[in-house]
Length: 605
Image (tube, rainbow, N blue to C red; front, side):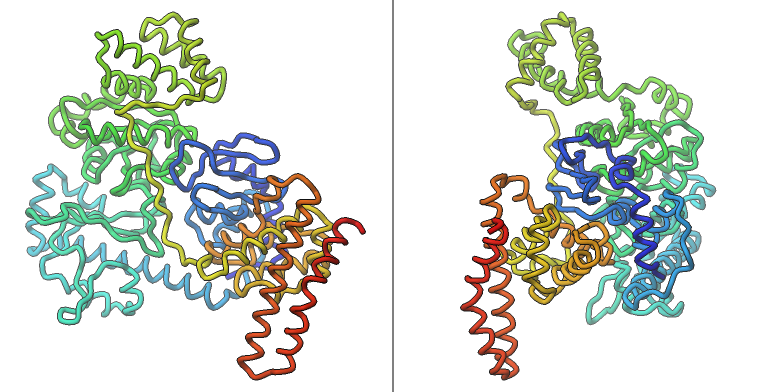
C-alpha cells in the first residue's frame, strides 16, 4: 500500500529532521549543520551531518544519506510505509486509507511475509526434531549444559539432523516457492544432491526480531565439526548489525538495565537464573545500530563479556559505542570464571547479583586496562601512563564533564589536580592522540554491498549534475539558469533524470529547489541515497568567490549539455535518423557560445 504525495509531505513537514535524528543520535550544532557520530557505522570522529534547512542528512564516512523518512527506514529497519506510519504517529498526522501498492512494492512485501512464514516453519521443524529420537544428541547436549525443558521451550531451541534434505521437502509441501527458499539462505545447492540444509547436525538457536518473529538462526555443531558456531546469512528480513539475541524478551524486563553478553548460551543461562534483561550481539562486535536499539528501552547497560583478553578488547570497543547513544556503561567482573554461563553454574544467582551490584563504571575499567600496560613502579613508565591518561581526558568534549573526570583521575592516582589539568590542556593544544598499545584496533568499517547504482553512472557527469542541482538549491540565479537551459532528458538515465524531473516541477510551481521531498520519489534506499547525494556538493562551501563559482557552474553546464547532445546523436545514429544527427552536429558547435551566454547571465551582464 502507498500514500499520496501530499500526505507524505505533510508527515515529512511535521517531523523536523534535526529533532527526529536528535532523538536517536547526540547532535551538536556546527555552523549551519548539526553533527554527530554516525549511527550506521562505528566511528570516533563525527562525520555524520544533518542540515535543518535542507531537511537531509549525510554521513561522509559510510555514505549513508537521505531525508527524515529514509533515516527512520534505515535505523529502524522498516520499509517505506511503516516509516511513514511511525512518523505520522509522532507528528499527529492522520493517515488516510492507503492506496494500492506498486507492483514492485507488492513483490517486496510478499517476499518478506513469505520469509517470515518460512523461518517460522523451519523453527517449528527444528524444535520438534530436537524432542524426537533423531534429536537425542542435541537434546542431551542442552541438558548437559543444565538447561531445563522450560528454558528449551522458552527460547524455541531445536536441532537440525544429519539427514539434511528433509526441511526442504517440508517447505515445498507447505507451498514455499524455490525463489523464496533460495532467498532464505538456509540451504546449499549442488547438482547431485539438490538443496541441503546448511545447519545439519547442529543445535539450533532461533533469532527473533523485536516483535518475536523468527528471522535467522545460530547453530552449534555437535562433535568437533567446523565452524563451531554457524550463523544465518543476511536476508531481506535479517541484518545482524540491527538485531540483538533475546531482545524480544529482554525489552519487557522490569530491571533498570540490560546485561550485554557475547553468546547465546550466556544469555540463556542468565535468563534461566532469573536475569531476563540479558541480550547478546549476533556473532559480531557491537554495532551502533544495536546500541541504538538498547537505548530505546534503557539508558543503562552492564557489559558481561568473557573475562579473557578477547572479551576485554570487545568490552573496550563496546564502551564508546554505547556512550555515543547516551547509555551509562558499567563492566561486570567475572574472575575467576570465563563467562556468565560458567559463573552461574559455579556460584549461582545470588553471587552473580552481587557482581552486578558491584559492577565497575566503564571509565575506571578503561583506566585499569590502560594501567596494566605500564610498569607503575618505573618512573619513566609511570610518566608515560600519566601522559596517556591526559590524552584520554580529551574524549570528553563538554568542559564540565571533562573537569569531573579529570578530578576523578587525579584523585585515583594521587596527582595534584592543577598539575594534571595543565597537562590535559597541553595535550588539547597539541591535539595529541593516544599511543596506548593495549587499546583495541579501530574497527574497520566494511560498507555493505550495494546495488552499485553509482557505478552504473558516469562519475564525472554525476559530479556535474550534483554541482548544478546543489547550487541551484542554494541560489536562485543558478536555478533560473537550470530551468532555462536544461530539460529532464539532459540528465543521465535513472536516479539523476528522475530527480531532475522533480526539480523542474518544483522550479515551475514554487520557484525553488527543495531536496527532501524529491528523495521520497524513490522507494529503494540505495536510490534514495544517490538522490540525496545530488544535493550535497561540497564545492558550494569550499568556493566562496562568486566569479569562480559562476565559472565552475558554467563548466558543469557545458559538460551536461555536451554529454546530452552526444547521447542524443548516438541514439539517432543507431536508428538511422540522419536529420537528428545533423541537428546534433550543429548543436555541438553552438554549445560553447551557449555557455558564454550562461556565464554572462550569471554575471548580470
